[in-house]
Image (cartoon, rainbow over all chains, first blue to last red):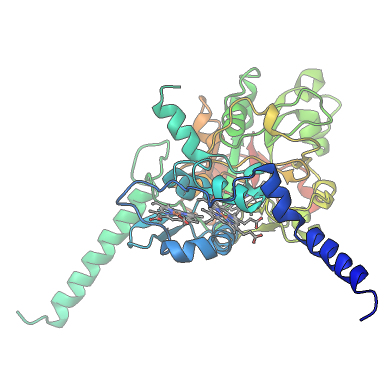
Length: 134
Length: 257
């Protein structure tokens, strides 16, 4: 084999470069443990079973959005069959107790930027503020 | 007991009558004015319209109750710079609101009368025809809707509207909103906004915010498709104006004179 040394050195450099995100985060001491997502109060249930929600909530929200704004269909039922208003702020966020302790933790960890918050307010946080006497 | 033809017909007639009464009560025809819709039940109509009593409104030139209510429930920002201004409803001078009513003998005072203006929810809206993304369209019941999720900020609709009813967000509106009501989303820089005839309130069985806020009962909202509605009675009883109706837009906001 010709130039084995050079090839192996090149390969080593390549591997190090490709692995940049991993060792960079490790060196930075980034917390790679999965986020702790706070659960809504017991006795409530999500729109779909939690497993499905984890994978499909983005699609579900886009569906809601089209139905509410464009078709004027505003109510649905949760997984337990209770009636539910199709609203990002007033259902998802209100029941999940605000963005910070649920949605944001997962999105931040995954580096997902959700632009919906530019317009949709954090209902849960306001409820908490009201309850806290503010 | 066997049901014969007679009792069947009688029962059917009674049920029909009961339904008709329920409907009439629900629509406020048998109750005292002003008409208050049943809470929690969506208001539905075939063609929504608004009648504004010019005299009653002009008698209180300093009153901005309707404008404040509208802008509060919809998180409309307040910019002092007129170039950035966002307005869903506002007051215009008579001469600007009704350029076709120009009259050299009416005098300065009449020309300067304040007139409440808003989106006319036109029968034939020019704004919706030019929208390249269908972010604005006319609903079956006449509401000219905005889908803020689809608006790309091209501002064709702003140019097409002959009433100046649409505003564009040149800067982030959030810092300029006095107090954000989290139950209605704000908008962002780069989208157009306008009066939505409170369609989100209609869905909850509430009248538009401006109508309920007016302390003088100058605003009447109702179904123009229903000949028995209060708005139709008013329009039949009193002469009315529409803004720039010669353009063929068919405004659904009427001004009682």
